[in-house]
Image (cartoon, rainbow, N blue to C red; front, side, top):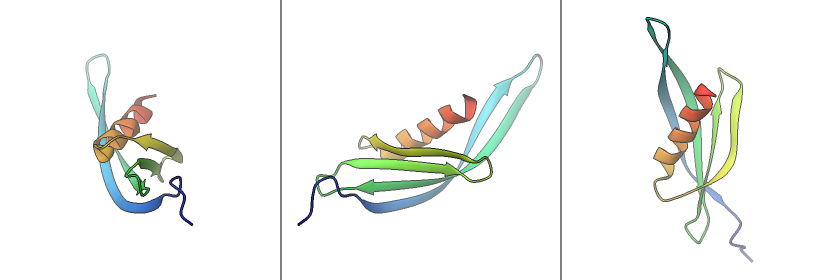
Amino acid sequence: MKRSNEYKLQNYYLAEIDTVEKGKSVLKMDRWSWDIYIATNENKEYQGKAVAPGKGIEIPWTPLGKDFLEEMMGICQRKMIS
């Protein structure tokens, strides 16, 4: 018997996300590579997880809305500047 809290991996994305830091007189751009995983259940509820392998950072499974990839990329970008 399936339960609605069982998620199946639906998509994998390799995303390169840029962030810009403002210094005193210089703008510094940094690009990170992220492995983004999206899973869904039978109720079309989405969860996302991301890993930045070169940085040793992982974002655990997180509930997402319908714009799951954009939302997950935003979470990754916020993690880059925190």
